[in-house]
Image 1 (cartoon, one colour):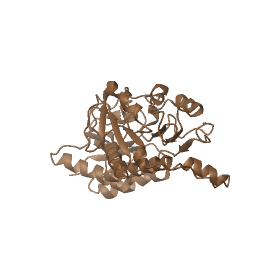
Image 2: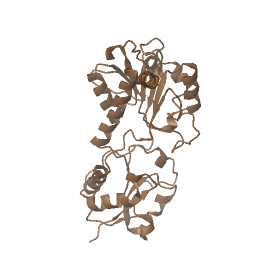
Image 3: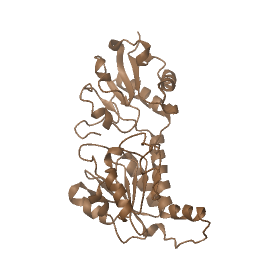
Image 4: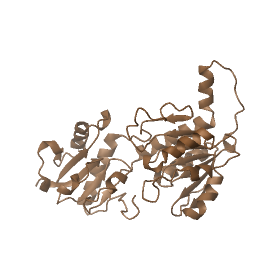
Length: 320
């Protein structure tokens, strides 16, 4: 008996995310079932599973026999915005490789700001041999907003490197060795102690535009960096980009590392491209191993069909 088909709805032109490449990966991982793309004449009635990345709004509603939707990334805000999304389990891709890559990114950028890379690269261009005093990691407090799998892993690595690490989340979290804050009432206390703010929050109605002037102006003002730093590798919608730019201009922020933006690809006329205080990356902080993601989805399907429970199912009320 032929097993239910897996439909791939992937809206990307990036080389590693081309639909044809994903089809080859999933055919290897799900060799016991049909794997189909929309342009291959698939019968919607045969589709029981969908693996997706930014599908067009309404595209999933055609599959009346759908049992589960698998997001090929950890973020699901674009999917949640689709009011026609079928009422079946929505599963996030949470794999060790993705977590490790995000921790690499966060650690890299915390260290670059800590070790004054913007100043040192400017000195190199100017051929100026003028090193400044380098403070120890123990003098810097890194505050992580978002203490899920990604935030907790990054926090532990930064703690091992000697940084002071604190964390904030919407609901209470407990991480050994790290002081945590939660909820609106405790956000101010968290921000006032933070030299480097790392944002790994999911994008929900509550977090939309949370990185605004009020929040950035509440960060620690008398730390060793001279002015606080923002690192956002969460979602572009978390940013009030006009506020971030104005805070960089007036010294409210000393620098920023930004991996995500409200509009992607980032328009060529954006001021972020050439801003001297910005380290910019093209939403690749945690571009996980596609083969491992494919195997993860295949394992989840096998688990479900064997009577087990799916892992990392999105709570649609919370939005993540």
